[in-house]
Image (cartoon, rainbow, N blue to C red; front, side, top):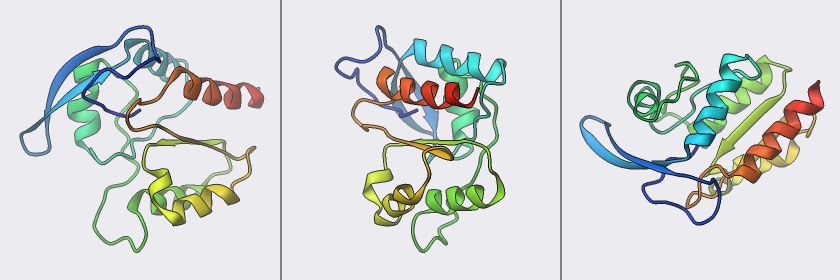
Length: 157
C-alpha cells in the first residue's frame, strides 16, 4: 500500500482523506481507497495471506497510520531502517526473508525501481516463488496491481 496525499486519477471507485500524526509529531495528508483496505482486512481475517510491514513508517505504520484508515492487518514490522545497509534496508529484509521461507512471497513497493540491486534481485526471482509489484508512487496500489496479487494467490490453490 502506498500512502499519498491527493486523489489519484482512475483506480478505485472511491477515495477517502485524513491526516495522520506520526514521525515524532509530523503530520501527513493521507488519501486511501476504502475498498482496498476492506479487501486487505478480509484477506488477513480469512488468513489468505500474512502481512508484514516493511515501510518507511516503520512502527508508526501499524501504530498510527493503520488505525487512521481502518486497516487491521496486524502489527508485525518485518524490519527497520537501522542505517547500516550497504544497499537498501528493505532489500536486505527481503533477501533475509527469501532465505528463511519457501512460501509465496508478494512484495509491493513504490521504490523498487529506484535501487539497482533491488531490480537485480527481482529479475532473479522465480514467478512461482515471488510476485513483485512496483507500485506507481503517484497512484498507489491500483485495482490492476491487486489483481496481479490475487492471481498469484489463486494459482497456489
